[in-house]
Length: 540
Image (cartoon, rainbow, N blue to C red; front, side, top):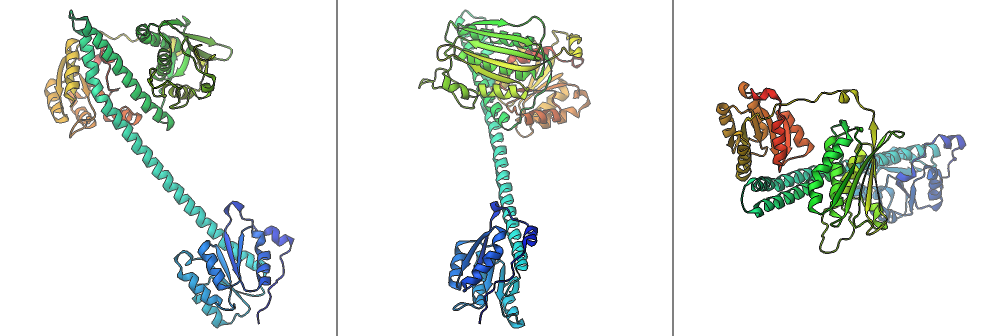
């Protein structure tokens, strides 16, 4: 006859020593016994472990619970009417999902034959009743912790798999964007060169020069859109690295304003520049600071109607050690509900179906990200629609760095005409670039692949090499590595001209031996300035 098992309860000190399990990781424990008083006794003993206790009064009921739930451990009475504990254990073990669930037999009969039979059916332990509460708690607790450890391990493995998949997706996306930029930039190069050539042609047809200006402006607009798209992705992944130096913000603003003045003139907009005559020094990346100011100028140009006014002002707040840039316009303004979202990626005010103001909604997001990388802040204010907009940037200002203040300008001889090897597989880009270089008086040889380039270089001895990266068979990196190994060619100044403009691409170019990385489409005026300022030693 079965006995009711109400063993001695643990005292307060023993309860205090039992480590509690985190409720957030609750597991299921199944208690199978045909006597309600036994179920109640086991639940009372195990209740302090804080887990989900489920009971069953028969083998059939227990099987239903095993089908519905996953259990950390099953406490199983041996002697039950109908299906006994051994038969139930065999059925539990035959099911794949519960094949390894720990089983602890509870019985008043502990002879060796029964124990052997219990272990043969897959039991992990065999406890005699009435049970000692401390022992039952300790044994059950072990299986709770094992179950939680398995859960955590599975969760961590799943998280690692998700993270790996996300990283792989990011990598593939970055590669795709890099390739997309390369493919989009490639046709822009010859178009930009052709526009430059059109403007140089002396003709009675004034329209030719006008057409050159239109093409040039639209190519630069498309280039800016491509750069914004790539930079927004880099910024989101923390992949924009600043090349900081002490720079004069006054000079940067003056120069950027002059660069954009012609665009404002074409839009019939007035530009006022209020910048101190004395330098205001900041530690920053000059290229990125120009990009910030340029994006705000572009925004003002886009959203100000003809006849309007754009004002840029720079002030030095010495008390707060801050450089404050404000760019205001008399344009269409911003409605109050849009102000909190103006720096969000892809967020723009409604423009109507004609999209006359254009843009991708990336420029201002880049402004905010780049300013914050410089440990600054940017804000926008507007009194409403039709009342203009004002952007204010605050950057940490520096005392005049002695090394910058006392640096003598480097005098570079002008007029040196180098032997230039142009390595480019795009025939239109190669021919249009060669025509521009020829017109400036350079001696130019071209090659459409790496093998031909190295053969020409052995005879031509170029002082400057303009080399594309994405060449057939032998890429630009291999070409330059091979060129650097030839003693007579090792001192040539090598410029990468490529549609691949990511930080990683620039790093790979430096490692391969390139002196400079220029992203397509190349503005010929920038290339001309670069050639005019090359180190004097390469002219020998």
